[in-house]
Amino acid sequence: MDPELMIAVMAERAPGWVRNFVGGEFVEPTESSWYDNIDPATGVPLGRVHVANAALVDRAVVSARGAVIAWAQTSVAERTALLRRAADRIEERFDEFVDAEIGDTGKPITQARALDVRRAPQNFRSFADTVAAAGQESFITEMSDGRRALNYAVRTPLGALAVIA
Image 1 (tube, rainbow, N blue to C red):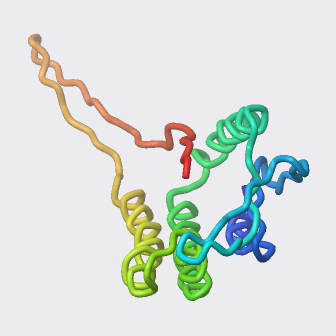
Image 2: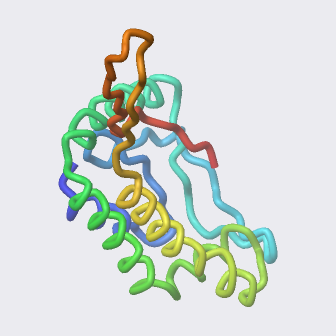
């Protein structure tokens, strides 16, 4: 996926409506595939969340597995730049993320500001630093006949993962 598109997706959100994003596009849900997102502190509905059925989850898995191939071919410099841009964008919209966290979880504003949302961009930067520092590993093996062999490991993205929240 184009890094700028990925960042735009993070920023896109119709007020109160949360849709699934699969294969580079928002999925249009059916009327029956929504649930109300209720503010736990007030009981007031904040909006609606699209529920993914088994077929949509399967579609997302197939899409994610395909995206891993392109991600693995992306240079370390490009991957780390994307992660850092994501962190920057979260910071640019910090107050919006705080409001969303408070509404979604009912947490006090001090906790949402100082811990939950503050940690998000730092996580992305930590991931970027980890990728940048991973490098390659190599070592020499001494064989019984006196010859030596070079062994090495190349680190590449392994696969997709799912997060259920």
